[in-house]
Picture 1 (cartoon, rainbow, N blue to C red):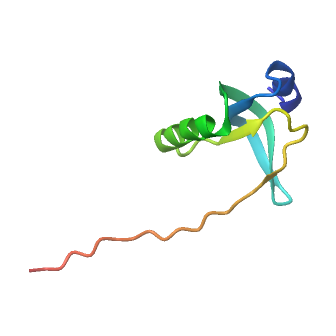
Picture 2 (cartoon, rainbow, N blue to C red):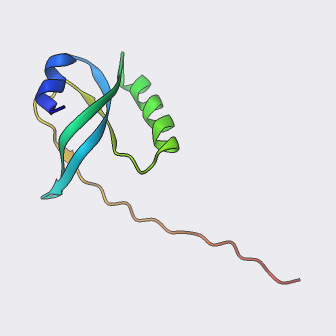
Length: 91
């Protein structure tokens, strides 16, 4: 679903959505097609569900959005991490 269709179908609501098709452009994430996962009474409830789903499927692209936003303005964030290796000493 396109964002304008999502807004028409879910007016003034907090949503957890999954980006089904998206790309990066000029430091922004452009969401082309969205699937609505669920609606929520507030952002806190949406965040709780996001955390659960992200833990179960970290490779999927989820977003918490409110449909009062006419345009999506999602800055792309690059995550840098350090992978720690366990050190085993020979005894």
